[in-house]
Length: 106
Image 1 (cartoon, one colour):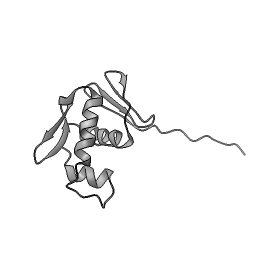
Image 2 (cartoon, one colour; image 1 turned 90 degrees about the horizontal axis):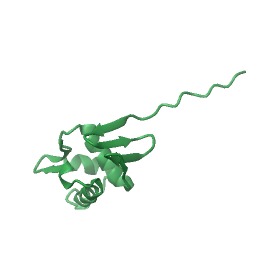
Image 3 (spheres, one colour; image 1 turned 45 degrees about the vertical axis):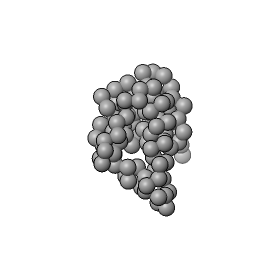
Protein backbone atom coordinates (compact mmCIF):
# COMPACT_ATOMS: atom_id res chain seq x y z
CA UNK A 1 0.00 0.00 0.00
CA UNK A 2 1.52 3.30 -1.04
CA UNK A 3 0.98 6.53 0.75
CA UNK A 4 0.40 9.60 -1.32
CA UNK A 5 0.95 13.07 -0.06
CA UNK A 6 -1.96 15.22 -1.12
CA UNK A 7 -1.10 18.18 -3.27
CA UNK A 8 -0.84 21.33 -1.24
CA UNK A 9 -3.34 23.85 -2.41
CA UNK A 10 -2.03 27.32 -1.77
CA UNK A 11 -4.41 30.18 -1.27
CA UNK A 12 -4.37 32.81 -3.93
CA UNK A 13 -2.10 35.77 -3.75
CA UNK A 14 -4.10 39.00 -3.96
CA UNK A 15 -2.60 42.17 -5.42
CA UNK A 16 -3.68 45.76 -5.79
CA UNK A 17 -1.16 48.36 -6.84
CA UNK A 18 1.94 47.79 -4.71
CA UNK A 19 0.06 45.77 -2.07
CA UNK A 20 0.35 41.97 -2.05
CA UNK A 21 -1.37 39.59 0.34
CA UNK A 22 -0.36 35.93 0.47
CA UNK A 23 -3.03 33.97 2.34
CA UNK A 24 -1.01 30.75 2.53
CA UNK A 25 1.91 32.47 4.22
CA UNK A 26 -0.31 34.93 6.08
CA UNK A 27 1.93 37.74 4.83
CA UNK A 28 1.21 41.13 3.39
CA UNK A 29 3.68 43.45 1.71
CA UNK A 30 3.61 46.92 0.26
CA UNK A 31 6.18 47.61 -2.45
CA UNK A 32 8.03 44.50 -1.24
CA UNK A 33 8.15 45.66 2.41
CA UNK A 34 6.72 43.09 4.83
CA UNK A 35 3.90 44.49 6.98
CA UNK A 36 3.45 43.61 10.64
CA UNK A 37 -0.35 43.30 10.77
CA UNK A 38 -2.68 42.15 13.51
CA UNK A 39 -5.14 39.40 12.55
CA UNK A 40 -7.96 42.00 12.21
CA UNK A 41 -5.82 44.31 10.06
CA UNK A 42 -4.87 41.37 7.85
CA UNK A 43 -8.53 40.35 7.55
CA UNK A 44 -9.65 43.90 6.68
CA UNK A 45 -6.92 44.18 4.05
CA UNK A 46 -7.98 40.80 2.66
CA UNK A 47 -11.62 41.94 2.33
CA UNK A 48 -10.57 45.15 0.61
CA UNK A 49 -8.27 43.31 -1.79
CA UNK A 50 -10.98 40.77 -2.63
CA UNK A 51 -13.30 43.65 -3.47
CA UNK A 52 -10.80 44.86 -6.07
CA UNK A 53 -11.37 48.57 -5.51
CA UNK A 54 -15.13 48.35 -4.97
CA UNK A 55 -16.37 49.76 -1.67
CA UNK A 56 -16.86 47.30 1.19
CA UNK A 57 -19.67 48.56 3.44
CA UNK A 58 -18.94 49.08 7.13
CA UNK A 59 -21.70 46.66 8.16
CA UNK A 60 -20.26 43.94 5.90
CA UNK A 61 -16.86 44.35 7.57
CA UNK A 62 -18.49 44.16 11.02
CA UNK A 63 -20.59 41.08 10.14
CA UNK A 64 -17.70 39.30 8.45
CA UNK A 65 -14.82 40.02 10.80
CA UNK A 66 -16.22 40.83 14.22
CA UNK A 67 -18.52 39.13 16.68
CA UNK A 68 -22.19 39.35 15.69
CA UNK A 69 -22.88 41.05 19.02
CA UNK A 70 -20.63 44.00 18.21
CA UNK A 71 -22.47 47.31 18.13
CA UNK A 72 -22.55 48.29 14.42
CA UNK A 73 -21.92 51.91 15.41
CA UNK A 74 -18.63 51.00 17.08
CA UNK A 75 -15.41 52.73 16.13
CA UNK A 76 -13.54 49.40 16.00
CA UNK A 77 -13.59 49.26 12.20
CA UNK A 78 -12.55 52.90 11.85
CA UNK A 79 -9.68 52.39 14.34
CA UNK A 80 -8.50 49.22 12.59
CA UNK A 81 -8.57 50.90 9.17
CA UNK A 82 -6.68 53.88 10.60
CA UNK A 83 -3.91 51.63 11.95
CA UNK A 84 -3.84 49.72 8.66
CA UNK A 85 -3.45 52.98 6.71
CA UNK A 86 -0.47 53.88 8.89
CA UNK A 87 1.17 50.51 8.35
CA UNK A 88 0.63 50.68 4.60
CA UNK A 89 2.57 53.95 4.63
CA UNK A 90 0.14 55.61 2.25
CA UNK A 91 -2.93 56.93 4.07
CA UNK A 92 -4.57 57.66 0.70
CA UNK A 93 -4.43 54.00 -0.32
CA UNK A 94 -7.65 53.26 1.60
CA UNK A 95 -10.53 55.60 0.92
CA UNK A 96 -13.62 56.03 3.07
CA UNK A 97 -16.50 56.58 0.66
CA UNK A 98 -19.18 58.22 2.77
CA UNK A 99 -22.24 56.00 2.92
CA UNK A 100 -20.63 53.30 0.79
CA UNK A 101 -17.75 51.91 2.83
CA UNK A 102 -13.99 51.53 2.53
CA UNK A 103 -12.15 50.77 -0.69
CA UNK A 104 -8.62 50.51 -2.04
CA UNK A 105 -7.56 53.33 -4.31
CA UNK A 106 -5.29 53.03 -7.34
